[in-house]
Length: 92
Image (cartoon, rainbow, N blue to C red; front, top):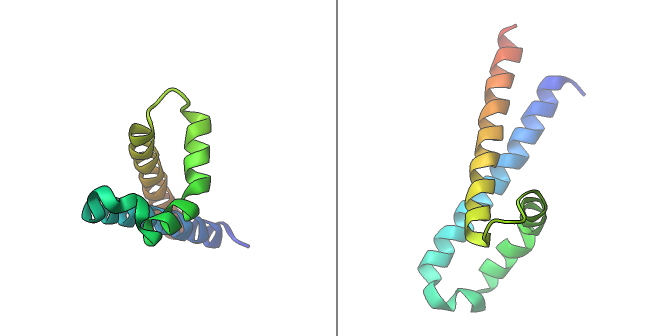
């Protein structure tokens, strides 16, 4: 496995997680106070459980809503850095 294919795979996985976080946020806004009863939100929570556990381990003092925002921004920055790294790898 080359470095380029590893970067592409990691970037794709991060993109999936980022879209799951965006989708969960949009659906929670649309569901309002009934978001706890929504099966799709529970599915998103199940899929995002590893990300939340990792962010809770890295940032134990933050509230859950801030932790989700900070983890989203960190994942987005890693995704962008992988994009730049992929571009530099292809150019060289």
